[in-house]
Image (cartoon, rainbow, N blue to C red):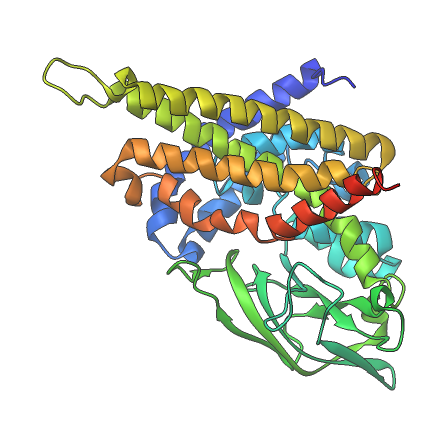
Length: 398
């Protein structure tokens, strides 16, 4: 196990950190207070700057126009980009597109690669992933009501999805639907590419998340498939392999998420330390930093961030060396550890900022309300804890 960073990667990280600080963080006041669509022209300008710097699509293969970084390298990039909500989008490695690119690259045929994958990697279009259902447990994706029934040369899709992130403005969805209802439970669902302008694909609303509905990329859509007809050639990968393909997508995706969360931790930690050092709380000039409880929060946060970071880099190294299946325990561990570390750090930073932390005058309130879901999506913390405990306990059974 060697986490040595090459000189090239050090330069890349430095360039990204400088770009985020100079070009993206100054945009955050507008991002926080405007409809996101109003920022799209300037977002495109920033994307073009990134492409000229040859830093576009860091995690995607070189033959597709990306940088071809491995998972550990992209983890470091994702950490740097996580400092701003705009980071991953501007660098062309945002979820859910990043996961869709991985699936299309692995399972897409030539026609699907040309029509959907190539423009997606280039950043010319966006996509969404429709899996989670309103009336089904999101942490158990084998339970699914949405169906895709063959009719002639088509699939006819019916079902109700929600938390289809970034559906607003997306060109296509990768939808999970039951195609083989009589098969074993893990072989019932398939992935089907559905252009979002297909009749019967209905974006009902952008779901308000803690009072904010969002728009365009920064939104979570509720979708109703109503006799939505797409050609069977839009099947992605083998029929009945949707669950298996979803697991391929989620393993590396959790590294992306966790390193992004660590970027949020780092930004929040810096803000907390700066605020503690600057905030005068007494006539004699003492600051918040003089208080032992603040010092304890800072030391605890520093230790928690370092531990979570090392765990995540180790999991990324394991995926790179032995594959997602053999690294599944490492992946499950970081999912709930890093999500909770982020919550602790953001909460402490917000507390140190006092009333200011509750406002949208800093990025902390955005982190607090939008990243609380980290303990829920991609499998609730409790599910990961239970599943990994069962696997550990098997070793002790007599």
